[in-house]
Image (cartoon, rainbow, N blue to C red):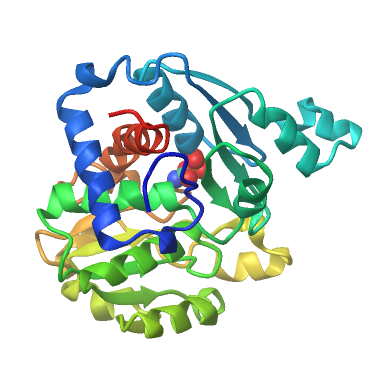
Length: 306
Ligand code: CP
């Protein structure tokens, strides 16, 4: 499938070769930023954020500006006519006529696909509920490749909220292309959803489920830490029963390979002590910054910029 006009809704829609095309484009953009500064002059991105965001929204906006394009949108849906009762469908149809590409974050699973089915322009999923976050995954893979020097044959641990963590779901699917061995480390109530495990079985991914991080920490090349997603719990007592269940501090590094890389999609709450930030293993701030060249690559590719 070509890139021009393509929706980016699920990481499952991308082959290994297509994933590598995005990472290579992002690497070239990072090295030769000035070459791309006029690429999308005259193009408009609509950034529609129905849920809070710092990294995704602002890195999308920075990406579009750095490509010479411009941005419209909202981060507070209560200030739009949705507050007067306008439907999602009508809102999408209207905005489609004002822009060339739509990046959308929404609390409902399937909302990006729903938007893509309504509009003519390409839609990029910036996070749909607890489902997927494909542009974060391209960013995660870019960061892992840059820091580990490869993507193939890595042992990757996912820690924390694997039930609601959409970044975990998308990254686990993507790693199925790279012969990863995966450790899913979580309390039982936040384990990886069965439908995702079924999909990983179909893709013949080797994975293990574990509750105790220290039992597996010395096997890992990459540890992907996630926040417990308070906002997705229906019952506050359930949240309080798992809140603060994993907390990493510098002493954790005594139990790992020295070359371990620690990623986190951020925001963090208390799962990584800031004292760990200066360790060479901690690359989560670099990961967040990599979101700009990666989203520049995706915007350039779906809008046909060379
Ligand atoms: N990683 C991520 O999606 O962060 P934001 O919620 O701040 O966009």
